[in-house]
Picture (tube, rainbow, N blue to C red):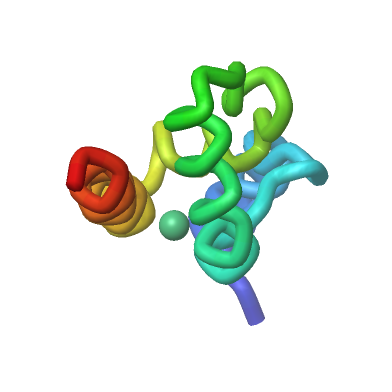
Length: 78
Ligand SMILES: [Zn+2]
């Protein structure tokens, strides 16, 4: 059984988690498209707000995003 503290933190968790959030798996599936849009000068955060939202919150995915940006920029620059 959950005790009172566990229950209230669970309720808080549910209340603050928006149903339209994505997780790392979905983010990583979309992030290359996201980077390509940005490099093309398009408003990626407008087109893919859930990816932007996740990148703002998740350090791992942001690092992935930055590494990908650097790699693609390097390819374009060559
Ligand atoms: Zn993530």
